[in-house]
Image 1 (cartoon, rainbow, N blue to C red):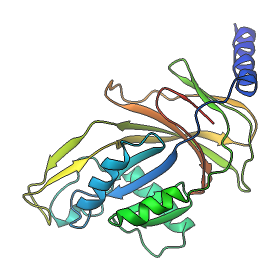
Image 2: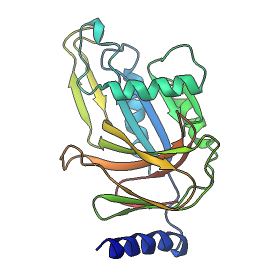
Image 3: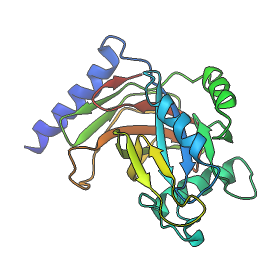
Amino acid sequence: MRTALISFVSLVLTSLVAAPAAAKSPVLVELFTAQGCSSCGKANQAAAELAERDDVLALTYSVDYWDYLGWKDTFAKPAFVERQRAYAKAFMLRDVPTPQVVVAGKVQASGAKAETVEKLIDGAHLPPAPDMEFVGTNRVAIGSGASPRGGAEVWLVRFDPRKQEIAVKRGDNRGQTIVHRNVVREIVKIGAWTGRPKMYRLPTLTKDDDLATAIIVQGAKGGRVLGVLPPGGKSR
């Protein structure tokens, strides 16, 4: 049984090299926002519009450090703040701002400046991405490629692609309705990537048919994004 599994994995990884070109990896755009942040509304709307683009994977992370103003963010998790802090350290920022947009793990800007974000997306010169493919329901195969100094990490992201409107009843945004798209609900590091082909087993997460799954390969500790596998597809 084990021998058969190893042969299957080897076959899949070999096929990544031999297969025709897959779809180009989309540009990863990550918005860090909060329902209690009075200046985040425009950024949320801009991110919702970016979510319509096929060449972009726009993800929205809610952070909890605005909760002290009186409204507890309904989507925030400590893991999202940890991810933003990793970026802050990589960008040598003194603090974590909101709304903040990170494009391809390379550059960051205020999420409220939609035109600036658009320019950063258009100017995102992505490195050749490794081939990636979902295998069944609980595995992902990642092909060969150039791994940065310091290594790379593979992240599993589960997000809700639906448009959601949250009525805020307290805090600075009291009485307003906050619009969300592609709200991240879970993000888990599933392993390291050294530049060699490898099969990864996906962890068992919350069962929710409304959530979509994406894979991110990026440099360690908030490094540049090397490749993105969007829901249900192949990517390179």
